[in-house]
Image (cartoon, rainbow, N blue to C red; front, side, top):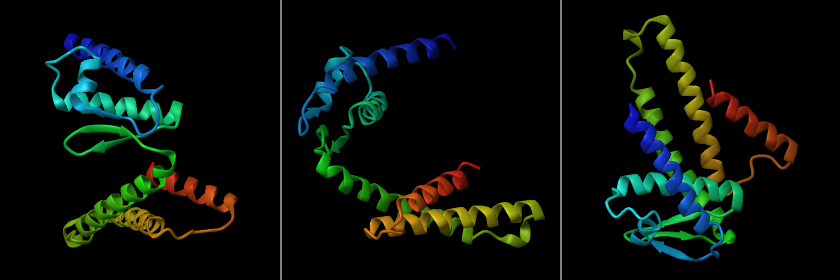
Length: 166
């Protein structure tokens, strides 16, 4: 148990070390995985642990600095230009839509006859949630505007968040 607490403290320190350097870097700057690992001064760190740290750094950059780290396959990360955020978001939505379609296929293949009443209602509820999100994701990835009124859009987003937080 003590190692987990120490490890979490180490992770926080490493996140802060990398974040403090990346937050002031310009858009378009790239960093290799080795460069990122050298910032925390731990050559023995596993790649999986480094990915975890960089994910947390990326979250801080998005919230505090409006920057996003995109993966460069086989190399490392790059701070993308603001003009690229929309395309990266669209690609994420497409991937999410594929995952939700797969989830829908799993739900659709459920043998409802072998479930009790509570389980059937749960499957039906889940199916509605997955279908709603998949439709919204499909519309977003096709660059279609669901609604024109900003207030209605905000309400729609709030409804979707409430729907999936249950």
